Amino acid sequence: MKLVINIDVPDLDRAIQFYCAAFDLKLNRILDEDVAELFGGPAPIYLLKKDPDSDCSNTVMEKRRYARHWTPVHIDVVVDNLQHALQRALKAGAVRESECVEWLGSKCITLADPFGHGFCLIEFVAESYRDSAGAR
Image 1 (spheres, rainbow, N blue to C red):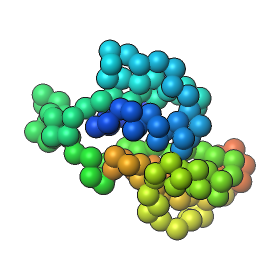
Image 2 (image 1 turned 180 degrees about the vertical axis):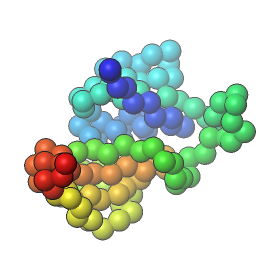
Image 3 (image 1 turned 90 degrees about the vertical axis):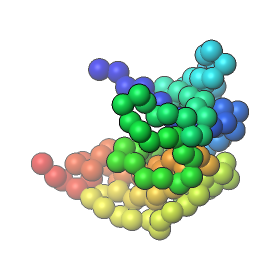
């Protein structure tokens, strides 16, 4: 299995600037003038230019909106140094939404990108929750 990440954004140039600055990603190429391919993480990220209030799909009545919103799926970015990653993301334009929460050998801070998408920065004591907590 291979994983790719797609993120809808209203402003492609601004999104490229944010994601490259916040996560040290590199723009690989622009596809069809409205899709940016970013490399540098464990999975490629595709930024998809989608206008506000456009249809999300032909089976869902909801329209795209870029104010802060909640979704049951979000990205967790695992980092080696949480405070350094936090400062980098904030400088790029992220908004901090939580204090640091410690859980099962991890430290986590919740943020939002400039387009309303939530994400977490996570630092593990070991390689994962299982390794950190001795879970089964």
